[in-house]
Amino acid sequence: MWQQGTWDRMSGPGKRAHAIVIGASIAGLSTARVLCDFYDRVTVYDRDDLPPTPAYRAAVPQDRHVHILMARGANEFESLFGGLLEEMTAAGVAKLENRPDCIHFGAAGHVLGTGHTLRHEFTAYVPSRKQLEWQIRRRTTALPNVEIVQRDVNAPLFDGERQAVTGVLLASGGDDEFVAADLVVDASGRGTRLPAWLEQWGFARPAEQTVDVGIGYATQQLTIPNGLIAEKVVVAGVSRTQPAGLGMLYYEDDTWGLTTFTVGHLAPPQTFAQMCTVADQVLPASQAAAIRQAEPLGDIAFHRYPVSRWRRYDKLRRFPGGLIAVGDAVASFNPTYGQGMTMTALQAGHLRRLLAAGSTDLAGELNRATAKSTYPVWTMNAIGDLTLHGNDGPSPWWYRPVGALFDQFLGAAETDPVLAEWFLRRFSLLDSLYMVPPASIVGRAIWHNMSLWWAQRGAASGSTRDPDPVPGR
Image (cartoon, rainbow, N blue to C red; front, side):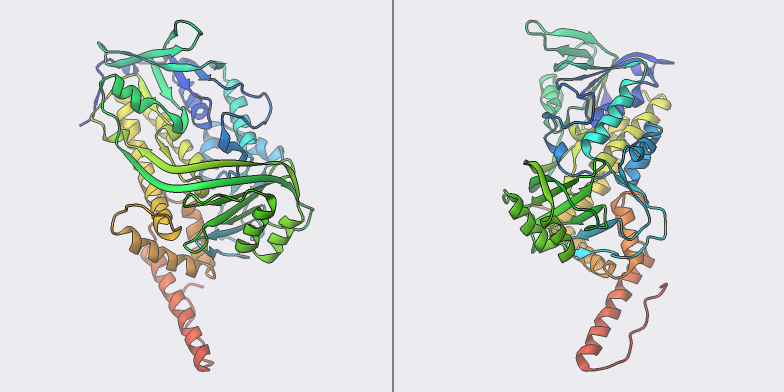
């Protein structure tokens, strides 16, 4: 059973005095937004020089690559930062609605629901990472009790007698400067040093679950002549036989971000010509031709993402008081699925609910809530990576048959808009975090594939008899 440190000032009534967030990432800023309703003062420390306008940051090497704000994530961020979506749209951010011309979506070698209008509301947004982060940062900065400070945090300060973190030590060129806090939040991302700090303080390091994905990115900003591409989002994922994929998004400044990527530790394309070759392999001819007519802007940006990692803080029996971890410091998801920002927003929602309920075991309850929402998304991603995308690695025996069934499902969803809509809504985490189809959807997929098989068999034998229609059409 979880045991938190004996010193826990979170249990007192009313507002707490001071919270510190390490890292002005999207996770850190979202956490600061939540904390400002429960603390008199919130300080966010980041060692980077944060730009006053939308701009790429050297400390965020992945920000040049394509990002999409899924429908669930858009709703969650709007609940934190009211008016965010409307202002992003006013700034030119593309809004994807229930129209068949918005998106080309390829998954594991299958293209889903092309040309079909979704029956239910499905609204996603396509801000560049620099635009979204700036929009969130300026809203956070405007909060009266939140301050963002450019300073480097060396480490939290742990009090052994209290078994709790009591603040942070800031690098100052000589002796570290101590700043006291009632709560310290590690939002420092994948490079977090929290496991090492825990070990140094006499706690166990968390167990880690990993998936070796070996992703290499190459991203080029483009301008494409008007009228050549109707979609605002073009995605073609990798498959067992195609280790290269592509994502292309239309951004708020009338430019496109084109990211080509590889898995299995293969080198990504190194030139724009090689990126065009990938487009020829995975996209319809008209879209690939439009990319060849594009004008590249600036240099190609490269990035590697070797391993997805989930640090299981929820499994620890002991954890210091006055400390929590959020975002990629806990779980970093395969970025080619585009779900990371949404998962961060869900975690901020967990924190807000726990603080509002007056939790006396904040870290324990937050880690358990995060694990509950992480498990289904992590598991389905791992199944996709290890069975549909050709990555190697150990996995439970049941991953492979589940992956084979989903390959059959995606095949049916290519020509059945109901199945395509079910998958897209679940993939974007809108209806549920679990990618488990109900019996009606499973039956529809089986019937659809049997009908296609029967039609192909009839065509091969010269029969003109039509198969029974798919029920519910």
